[in-house]
Image (cartoon, rainbow, N blue to C red):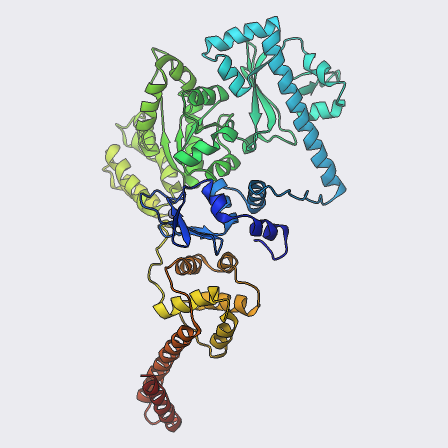
Length: 588
Ligand SMILES: [Zn+2]
């Protein structure tokens, strides 16, 4: 979080949370605050509030809240350093260059920058080849045949790697040494002769960008019958295929808005789907999804429609990806496209032949993954006990991967019904799988509502805002141990410490110290309508707390007296009782 005096703190002071949030949410002024429809949950009436005075936001619907950085982190699904950059950029503040830690690190960063340069130059080269050479013309005809016109070619940066074998190499060689060229992956070294040559020859090239839109690799499709049909860049210092999803850089906005992703296998599929106006599509660019890719996707949405190729490899990939997605708590549907004519259809072919409308319709109807799996299991021979067992064994691992216990048990029942499993053993295996899992049911964020008593709420508000007497009030509360044992004890403790520091209290900083439930309660209290605090009111709240404490003590004393009437300390207890009763009577 933003430390006092740090760059982050400076940016925060200059950034206006209302302006930053206003770039994402339509805000309306309501009293001192602004409100709008929460971008983090679906709602029709605004429960999302921003306070320009406290520079914080809070949603009464879903409980999200915090400062401008928390907002940007949630919105952009990024970590703090990235959020800081975003906010600084929005406010036109230059970011100091991060210090590089060691000479090696500096060297690595430089190398990475050069590798990105090489990719940029290679990309320009491939584009020129497609545009201006006879060979490129043939490639263009092929692309047009695949439904990729000029617009699409320009939009997705599609290019052409010529057949010569060293044209790109000759183009890059004057500027980069051999080692860098080989490290970049666009050039390969002949193992025996040690000679360099272009990795991609006579192929259509597709630039693969990382999340921030920098080209870090290429995918290339053979123009003729060359094998392999698809050839990608190797792993390099700037590209690791399990960390990159094709089209992610362009899909981000749509993913956030639509809150679901369409996952396809290759770049041709992703391009076809995106061309149909469906931008929330990403491709795994390999047969199955890797864990880092799932984590990347999970930052934007947890709902996925898997639309892999209908061939055996695609089915296996679908099932492997399903298992991983379920483990990471994704809500998964599977779209298995029907054949077009007698051809098995991938998204690219299907959209080309049947049109975007037809694809969209099927997308909307895509069944939950369990229906897909059951359908697959039903293709097995279910007439024998053995066959049924095989089907159950196929399904069990998926059931076990569902983190939600209730869902798990529902699926188990459904599978039993659909596969007509009446054998008690098979049923038992399923229900065992349904109960056995450590992960527990995810609950909706509990609404704190009117949890704390009004007096506590009022005092908390004063500690946060009453600049005039905050410190004195904090002293008083602390010395008299007035908040010990209260439901709001931790909030009080954090605010008292902040107030006694003599610095202005930053609600978001205090909030950051608290556990989720307490933090939400604090934000809720800070956004309640309230009048200007006065010292008199503070005193009457304190008195109410003192009385409550006295009442509690009195009850304790009374219990001790009744528990052991012959106790030697009875005299003291009775005196204490008298005193507490006197004190309470005086305030009434
Ligand atoms: Zn919300």
